[in-house]
Length: 573
Ligand SMILES: Cc1ncc(C[n+]2csc(CCOP(=O)(O)OP(=O)(O)O)c2C)c(N)n1
Image (cartoon, rainbow, N blue to C red; front, top):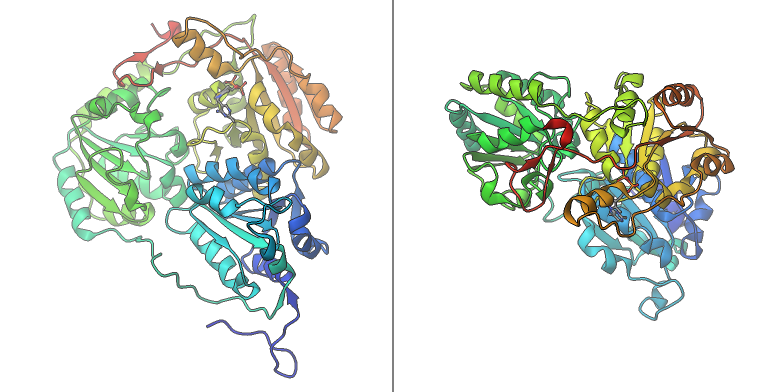
């Protein structure tokens, strides 16, 4: 039972408004920063923020605010918090909520709503945001009584960050944030029907041990769940002791070091030859915190790991058997499962297999035709890696540049690669970098973005500038919507339809108009020089890398074809 606040004479205090209670709850949860945008229905909440008890960053669009909260969550592992007003403020969060849901990111999204007596009347700025977001939240609350607020906030943070994390929405009508009540924050929590199972079943662990003794061609497919669970050390121990090579999905990059000799690279549509052919040939596939999505399987399950028994380790039982038939299901927290399994793990008889895969890794790496005349985007990404020694948090937007970062920046640490994996949200990367930098002030944070995606949320340059958030933006500017252009080239006979971005603004002038330092680079020498300046500049910086416009991402597996049908690109042939 909650402990009630009492005043000096032992009477229950009745002197907090709903919004003051909300603020106290957020502080109680250890929230360091909230991202948001005010409006009529959240005026009481913003009034409670007035005295500055909690750091608030005023985004320039609610989508920017929620992606920043998301980037903060991905960089720190703590829930991100966003506040928006009712109606358009709330609906501007929708993309960010879906984005977080797809990538299992803990967010607490607080929206104001019209007073309860107006709900359902099409009142000014009314939107049924709990209804709209029902399918894309892990859970949502419409608070109807101010006394419920502390419990709701406590539950929201708990639900967002436990089990398989995700976004939780708290919709607070204006009369609730204005209503007065006593305040006490619950010490404990009990949510009926919500007890995520974290400990693996011992029987399944012994089945796993047994099958490992026979596996001559085992393979680990590690996903974002490894990063979420903080299981990178356990994964290395497990892979090394059992002698199993590892491929990491886009979301799993950094969850297993890109320098480790057992690492094969990323699988799937733009994955390595070694990873994709390992998937085709393996006799045992252990999916760890990965959901076998169609950018890995290409939707051709009839061609995916057909020679393998599949072991699937995941905290979310709904993932098991969703996309692939599972021979051994292991439901539990990935960190706990791996630390339990590693104890008596046998070494697989896989030396010949590993030798073969390592040969592929050596002989068939990602390649591109470098040039001294043009700036190649792959060269730029490699330069970002070399100039930082890989010691950076890199966020990306969506498109070709995202894939080139995944290919040419071998991440060694978890939470150092931040990308919109599931939803593929253009506009995500730059605000996410701002959030990541606030969560990790000591880190070098680089936002690698496309000239298309940057224009979706570049208004957040205002936040970078005003709050002096030292994110370095690398615009991979190919003057077009590169990934769409590539698909139109490959699948639509070069009928380039609405992908030309030649009339984009001058990104240097755009950045400067916000008070952000910026440079342009057209060749390697310029690129090296200005990037060095940008890195050593103490505040935010933008570098417009004018890269070769017709470069494509290879290898490539066309959707609907099997992993055996990799298009290798001219350089590789
Ligand atoms: C919000 C949104 N709209 C549309 C798309 C479809 N889309 C995927 S990649 C891409 C092109 C991205 O172009 P750019 O940002 O310039 O990056 P590039 O591919 O050139 O690196 C588009 C339009 C998307 N992913 N997200």
